[in-house]
Length: 208
Length: 208
DNA sequence: TGTGAATACGAGCAATCACTCGTATTTTTA
DNA sequence: TAAAAATACGAGTGATTGCTCGTATTCACA
Image (tube, rainbow over all chains, first blue to last red; front, side, top):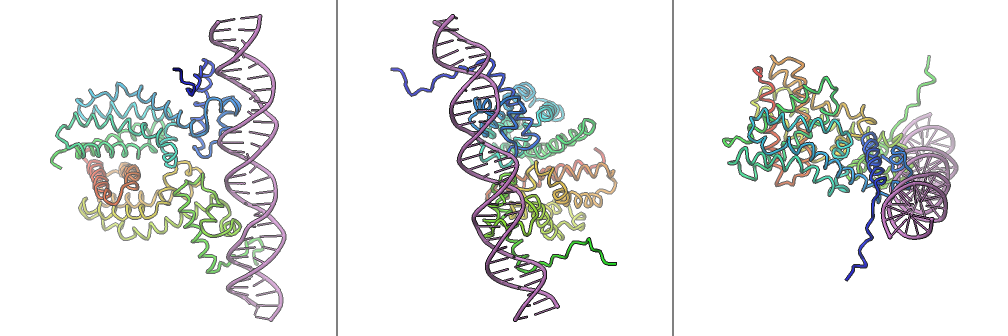
């Protein structure tokens, strides 16, 4: 028995995929510059060299643009960190581990200011919670696994809280990381690693 | 010689001061709930039980509402921390110092969600830079002075960066602090202090 | 080559926004 | 007590917004 209520399969052409990517690129630029709330869909379409009608052929509404953009960033983040965030880093000394984790994340965030713009806007959380949470959790969950291997004696509850706090600490320094010039960046990154090293050392110390 | 170009002195009545306070209270609530960009001035006026015309009798435009609100928060923050953030805390042991500094700041931020909403919106920085910077700098400058007394041998450049990083670390944990329930809060605050203690200990250690 | 689907356009709609203005009321001042 | 100043109102204005829709063009595929 065939399902009459099934929605007809939308066969997307290569042209359409390209347009979607262009629209997401434009959205990233406009969001990064104006913020989600002030960014207009007409401006996004114009920045992509498209008309409003074309934009709405690929995205149901403004919110879904941010959802799709977040999903695409998440994909790229996973790809960029698949190896660097590997569990193998748990065996490295703290210093080397932080290098392997922090450097690619910093590079990704600086290369994708639209990602930072979306994640740092606290009022997107309510509308985009379903799209943002996985992005927030990528680092958290991977760090949690690393800590599990690195400090197996740590109670799970304490370990989870430590991972969450560490991710928030990094997020707190992101404004400095994003604002730093190319010459200031190394010092900021060094300080970032120092802060995380100091916190993780005491938090994973069973004696505390 | 009298100055004909001087703007006429606007003599504000007690009724007007009260209205301004009500409008700022309403603005704080609307900003906290919707964010600055999505908050409408008509909604703010309505929340204060006033008409749009009344609102614009006291504030030139929407931006100035946020400026005045930030200034009022800054005033209250200074009042709340005048003693707690006193230089005398520099003489206390690290543990006690952090208690004296963190606890009132946490209490203030949780009691004033509108303050958090304004400061955490990154796209207000451009429009409200002049109003936000002093608010950002209150903690930074006071912490810088405390560190100067606490670690006089630290190079000023290093000390300033340490203060800046410490403030950003705290800001990074603010989302957790704001989201925590009353029962979760103590654990989050404990972790906050642990992170700052760990970072400040290593950063102010001359051997590093 | 013909046909339906996918892509593209952009004028324009309804809703919302920040803000104004003419007018009415209350308070201060002289 | 009368004039002046401050407060209050709220319908209305022009601009902008997210989004639609009728139509035109390009593609995939039989």
